[in-house]
Length: 82
Image (cartoon, rainbow, N blue to C red; front, side, top):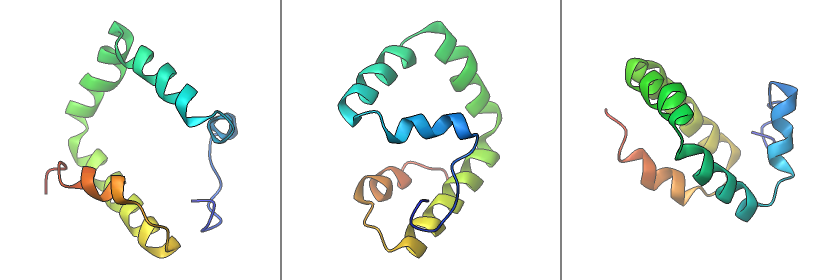
């Protein structure tokens, strides 16, 4: 997104750019293994399947426009309902 000049919003989310990926993965694994994650993300994503598909499609367009290689994203896209 930075390559395309798209600002990260809300501004507080910019902290994610500065956290080393290994620490971020550790934190997210811990958070995703909680009841809060089940309530806040799993149930919401199940009820917002169309919205999630639209977001994925928008990210794929931005990835193509940026010219950045995103093999992990491409691999994960195979699991999105078409």
